[in-house]
Length: 421
Ligand code: EPU
Image (cartoon, rainbow, N blue to C red; front, side, top):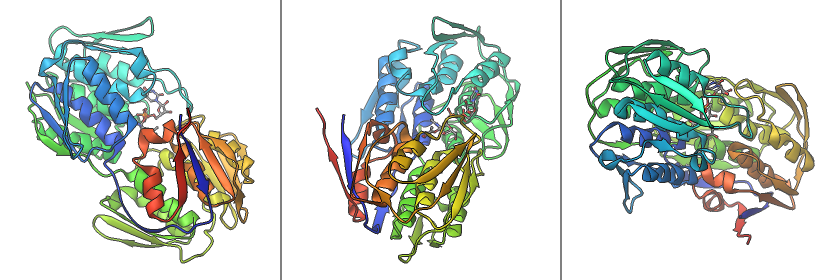
């Protein structure tokens, strides 16, 4: 297990390129199960979660070819096993995304039931109820979801009780090959859902309304292959911008999609950052000033993303004033707070809100990452600390941030990875 060493106190300065979005690449890879023809997925981020998804497809007998540019070609004409085993599902919950495609194309699927994780209980009941409404028989037994359907799934009017990103994606994929029309109400509006719908439409699906809370899918007989570049990662983009603001720096992020980050950019402006925005780039300049504390509340898109609240907690920890951060999507996403307090932060948790009173500077300490976005927030905290911070359990960060230490080094940060035996 590797560890990161950070010597804080440097204002980040320079330019970086943003990678393809993890949360778009994962469902798009699963969409490769919907056709016998090859699907080429481009702009793939180099991440552990992507490797896990490719491993999962591999153990089903799907052929994967990765070229020198990290484009991945999926060929599921060779599939022989319709099961996602617990050993892989427990390392990556997004494995649930194979359920809808397998069931709709092959009439059966078996996927280990994902358990809770560090950020919450995260049930998948909405995925199951919606597939049942489409005619599937589903049994949850011995830790597995076993789904079957005689013939094709049937289009249905599905009302999601709550907004779920992978739930919407699973049902949308299942509906592409169902008989008739499916309407998903209270659908997730996240840009990654839109990206998946755009890919499916290029594969011959008939999907409308993506990006709104009502998605209409007219089932087709079959889908075909295509070549599809996944969208840039908005969470990686926001993380580097927050790191730049917290360190009072000046950073330009390139190859991104600014319009997917409106709620985040508005909070960065409130914190005192000057922003310049182009078609595919964002430049943030703090001009050496201390950020001002901001308050925010997470909620589904287009509101402020839960995947970015931990990073703003790190910014608030060294900002002028007091900010409150309320988490409404997951029930246990404040594990980073206790580690930041060990670094001298002044953060109090009350229910699903944290109150952060900014201090002048944090003090480096050994800290432990508990999940992906918490890891990113601890790295930002390390960048604004005196002395050395070591971040342990960084396998979490490698799940979702490509080459994070190289990118931060190129912005001037003193950060290095130390392999542990
Ligand atoms: N929920 C249910 N029942 C369901 C589905 C969801 O109660 O059947 C609840 C969850 O427990 C949670 C809320 O609904 O409280 C929203 O969960 P959602 O299903 O939207 O989350 P997800 O699809 O499992 C995706 C991202 C997460 C991101 C969330 C919220 C992927 C692969 N993962 O998860 O990303 O935090 O949406 O935006 O797209 C990350 O990248 O670090 C990450 C955790």
